[in-house]
Every structure is written in C-alpha cells, then in structure tokens.
Length: 115
Image: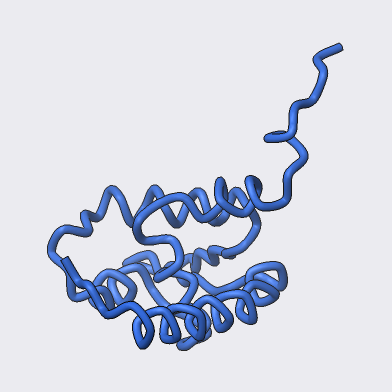
C-alpha cells in the first residue's frame, strides 16, 4: 500500500490542482455572473484572442470532471450545449469573492502591475 504524502491530503494543494489553468477562475466567474452560458458565449466573454477553442474545451472538461461545472446537451439541430455551475461550483463563489477583495487590497497597497 502506497503511503500518502502531504500533497495527497493537503486541501490547499487540492484547490491549487483544481484551479490550475490560466482560464479556470474566469470561467467560474463568468458562470457565477451569468448562471448559464453556451460555449460561444463563454469564448466571446473573454475578449482574448489567445484563448483557443481547444483550451476552453479542455478547461471546461476538467471543471466538469472536478464536479464544479455541469454540461447539458440538448438534442436539437444544431446541437445546443449549456454550461452552469454545479452546487459544488456555487460553493466556490465566496472563495472567488474573497480572492477578488484580496486582489483589490493588494493592488491598492502594492500597485497594479498588468504586464
């Protein structure tokens, strides 16, 4: 039996693993603000040409696997797919709000460095 190390049990490492990815927090933020979004609505919301369809798809899939986002496919032509926060995803909203407040405080104290 493999001995578990601290990375297997540390809640901060778990959170870091789930949120790893440049776009994941923003995806969760947009879904929190809009309740339900289709793929192209999410893509457009970023207003960033460096976000590829492949990367958005990958991040959405990972967020689904981590049970933070649900994906609903409607049997229509053309296919309609909607994304929304799961109950577990909604429980992360206060964490994001706290991160936003911390970031605002940081910017005020240290400066806003958008490199």
